[in-house]
Amino acid sequence: MVHVVEPRHSATLADYESIADLNGTVRSLRQEAESRLAGLDGRRLVMVNSTAQGGGVAEMLPALLALLRELGVDAHWLVMETQDHAFFRLTKHLHNLIHGMGDPNLGPDDRALYDRVSEENADAIEAFLSPGDVLVIHDPQPMGAGALLRDRADIAAIWRCHIGLDRETPQTRAAWDFLDPYATPYDHAIFTAPEYIPSCLAGRSTIIHPAIDPLSDKNRYLRVHELVGILANAALVKPWGPVTTPAFPEPAKRLQADGSWAPATEPEDFGLLFRPIVTQVSRWDRLKGFVPLMEGFVSLKLGLEARTDLDDQHQHALQLVRLVLAGPDPSSVDDDPEGKEVLAELCAAYDALPPHLQADIAMMSLPMSSKKNNALIVNALQLCSDVVAQNSIQEGFGLTVTEPMWKRAALMGSCAVGIRQQIRPDLDGLLVTDPEDPQEIAEALDTLLSDPVKRAAFGRSGRQRVHDNFLVFAQVKSWLELLTNTVAARWPRS
Ligand code: UDP
Image 1: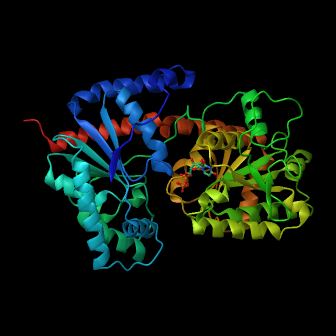
Image 2 (image 1 turned 90 degrees about the horizontal axis):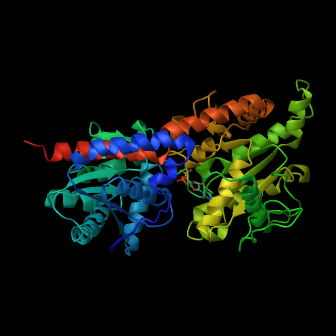
Image 3 (image 1 turned 120 degrees about the vertical axis):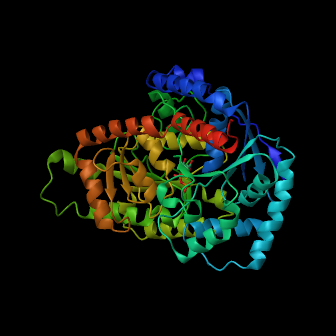
C-alpha cells in the first residue's frame, strides 16, 4: 500500500533568514538553488520511505521536502506501508544484518518473498510516477521496488541508505549479497559515512550527513521562562512559585527506589537547575552504552573520597554532579521487546546501587504521547546539561550528539563512527576509546567537570561545527547538487 504524505513543516526560509546567525547560510542556499534549478529542468522529485512517523528518517523528511519545495523543487513524499508481516520481519532482519547482528542465513524463500512484495509495491508506486521523475528510495524496504521501476520507466533512481557498519562481518556480507541485485539498476546511492559503503555501490555513492532543524521544538532557542516552564510542566523541577503554562498531560517519570516510576520530582527535586548535570538521552538500546556510562559515573563518585589532587572548585563540582539517563516511556516501546529488556537490565543495575548513589542518578522515562512535548523535554534536558554523553558502542550518526552540540553543551562521546564524524576530540568535546570501560568514562567526565572554561570553549566550537555542517541547509545543498548531477548523467544534453 502506498500513500502520499504532505510534509508538515511550519518554518519558512524567511523565518530562518530572520535569525542572525542563520541569515548568511540561508542566503547562500537560495543562491545555490537558483544556480542549480535550471539543471533540474522542472523534473519532479519523488521520495519513498516506509513510515510517515517514528524513526530518524520520518523525522528528517518534512523539513527537507518543505525546504526543497520552497526553493522551487517539485518534491513529493510517498510512504510504502506493508501489511505483510513476513516482509516486515525480513526487512527488519536485513536492517539488523547491515548493523552486523542476527542470523546470516537468508534463503530462496526470503528472496521470493522480497521479490513478490517489491513487485506489488513497484506497481503501486508506478501509479504516482511520470516519465522524467527522479525517484529517491530510502533504506532496504522499498529498494527492490525502486530497482524494478528504474528498469521499467524513463526515470532516474537514487537509493538513500541510512544505516551501516564500519566493518565487514558474515552478517553484513549476507545482507549486501542479498541486496546486490537490487543495487545494480540505481543511478546513485547515498550513505551517511564512507565506512558504510558496500563494494556493490563503491564508485557511485555520495555522503550526505543527517541534519537537524534549528527551529524545531527539539532544537529551537528557549528563553529562560519557557525553559523553566517546560521543566515545571513536565515535572522535571519543583516550581517554587506559580507557573503560567499548564502541566503536560503526562509528566516525565523517574525510577524510584522501590522500582516504581513516579513524576521525576519524586522523591525530591533532582537539581537540574543548580547542579552540574551530565545527561544521555537515547532509545533503550544496548548499543547506546547506558550501563557502562552509569558504571563510569559511579566510579567517578566512589573515587572522590580518596582523591588528593582536587582544588576546591573541582571537588565541589564532583560532589554536586548528577547523572540523567533518559529514554522513551517504556509503555511506548511495547512492540520493542529488546528495548524493554535493556531497560530492565539498567533498572536492575540502578537497583543494586547504594541509596546515596541512587540519589545522584535519575533514570528517566520521557512521555511519548505528544511528539511536541517530548521534543520540548529533550530540548530542555539538553539545555540544562553541562555535559551531554553519547556512549554508544555503535552509532550510525547520532542526532543525540548533533542536538546538544547545537545547544553549546560540552560532549563526551565514544569513538563509534557516527560520533567520530561529529565530535572533534579536544575541540568540541572528548572521545572515549572504549565505551565499555567505566574507568576511561570516569576520567573523561572528570576532565570535563574540572574545567568550566574548557567546557564553554567546547560548547562554542560544537555549535559552530553543527552550524557549518549538520543543519538542514547543508543537507538541502548536498541534495540539490546530487539531484542535478544525477539528472545530467541520466539525461545528457546533446
Ligand atoms: N529521542 C527522543 N526521545 C527519547 C529518546 C530519543 O526524542 O526519549 C530522539 C533524540 O532526540 C534523537 C532521536 O530520538 O532525535 C534518536 O536519533 P539518533 O540518531 O541519536 O539515534 P537512533 O535512535 O536513530 O539510533
